[in-house]
Amino acid sequence: MGRFLIVAGMAAALAGCATGPSHFPVQATRFHFNAMTDRGTIAVEPLTGTGTASLEYKTYAAAVQTELLRLGYTIPAPGATPDFLATVSFSRAARPLPPRRSPVSIGLGGGGISGGRGGGVGLGGGVNFPVGGSGVGEGVVTELSVRIRQGADAVWEGQAQSLTDVTAPDADAGAVAARLARALFTDFPGESGRTIEVP
Image (tube, rainbow, N blue to C red; front, side):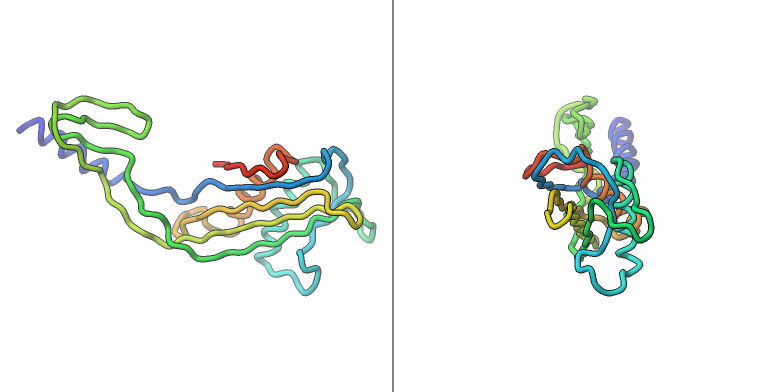
């Protein structure tokens, strides 16, 4: 009886910690046609090149510009023609989150406590049940696309996308844009045609 109360108490405590991720890994795919070793001035513009850029677009453009500057590109002087042009677009679409499943189970009489990393504590022999449950929340899939041109020629392009829980503390446009841009330019220029996953 005493052992059952201890296990039940542990189950209740762990159930309160069982939640799903607030955002998911970013998948990024890049294509390029040379080693992209040249650096120079670069301007960031909307993909359409027309109309007034929205405030949300400016958030994504700023995230892309931050990464490009980190890579060694520079901002052109006012009125000067840049060496490179980066066109940026993004899209957002609502999508239900996948079921939330706890990676922790409690073994009553046999399986012990097991975690996602394979550790465990034996408590005897018997039945396991998962801690926590499953639930579906509201998410948003965001995709960021960037194309770099040198003169009339496109020399690099990439897309990054990820799913985010809209209730997460870092679900604002600035945080999402920064995550996508950082993943997109990871190990720039990247292996052409390969899709990578960035936590």
